[in-house]
Amino acid sequence: MKRGRSKVVIDVSLSLDGFVAGPGDDSDHPLGGRGGEHIFDWYFSGDRAYKGTMFKPTAENLPVVEEAFGRMGAMLTGRRTYEITGGWGGEHPVKAIPVVILTHQPPASPPKGRSKLVFVTDGIESAVSKARALAKGMDVGIGGASAAQQALKAGLVDEIHLHIAPILLGDGVRLFEHLGDEAIRLKFVDGIQTEDAVHLRYSVRGTIAEGRTWT
Image (cartoon, rainbow, N blue to C red):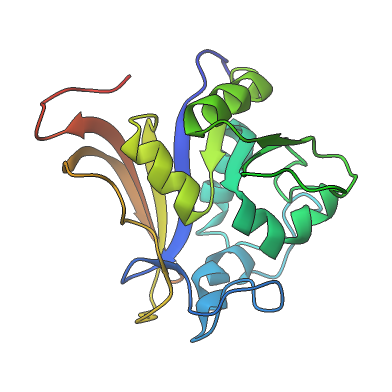
């Protein structure tokens, strides 16, 4: 892959009604109640593990997984996601890439593993800058609603990749809220429809109110 400027990409699975987890998500129920775990069925509905990972996509969903693994160089997320996942045991499931975690207070004893975990206390712009440096020209993926909302509001997101599961949760952690006072314009890039999910990609153009674009 040719490496240049890292793109910042919100890359999330969610329900058709816009929730990235059901209600009551915690370390015992990482994706909450009401069947929140089913937003990730597309990752696990096949019968063969992808390159020794935990993921088992079907042939229809395999190109999406391959593309993500090929371009991702670092992840950025919030402290809540870190806590719910137990810090991924020190090894993020996507290639053990480094992870930048937004937090007010770094944990005393983060897990040790192949992933470099970097805790940032001085805001989303600093977090994105550090994640880009760690990505070394590859993309920065944002997971978790709070980090995604902060990055969008600050105008730091290049693309949004949505993996929409055929389920209506009705309640839980909503992805698109707390985005500020201006509507955000997107441009459709491409999409793939499968039985387990609809995969959509958009580029972020800017806000309608000011007519500006973000690069």
